[in-house]
Image (cartoon, rainbow, N blue to C red; front, side):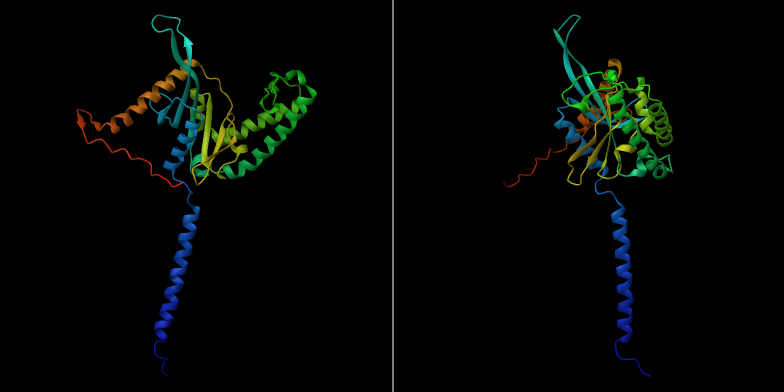
Length: 288
């Protein structure tokens, strides 16, 4: 029995179409798994957000210690103070400092913790329980209130002095689970360096949630359009002033490479070279 003319070609075309559709599905899965924003744009979004906070200086890839544990972005705000010594009457001193770590995925947040997804729900329940106990403490032990403010959410409380034993039990459990998540990670090392008053984690929105943060860290959600939502404020670590000066000097040193690049100066181990300076691009005008 003879096959109809062209039937083999149609069978091949059908098979080829199935292969193409399968490949498109695989590519779709692959692209859906990829973060919507690159690490470069993530850092740019954070820097733009810092400008809105009236930052005085910032840089990226800042050493938090002498050589290692570089922070993605460090920033500082300054204030004037009367000069107790000779020279000018007023000098600039650090007011507050901040470190922002940028991550594109959950896995980048906990590279050394394979069971982060299992620990996270337990940590959420514990923190919800702690919040409920803190609410009870505010009613039962009003003497622990430190400050009187117009807005209750900005009031400080000395919960650690509470006589509520459940609060202390839950707090210890939270510390245990946070240690399992963060012990030995960059987050812990940066926190221990005690250089920043405020530490933030910046991630694409819906990547990491507030209950998963290490203690005192704030959370920034970066959207695809590079706008930022503050999901949770960072606590003030009140780091020593000398430590702030250390971070500010590292910001200045890290900024030098960008200054040299902008001027077309390239340094090798044994010489300095002059290159054509890169052209500054002007932002495109948009029609109103």
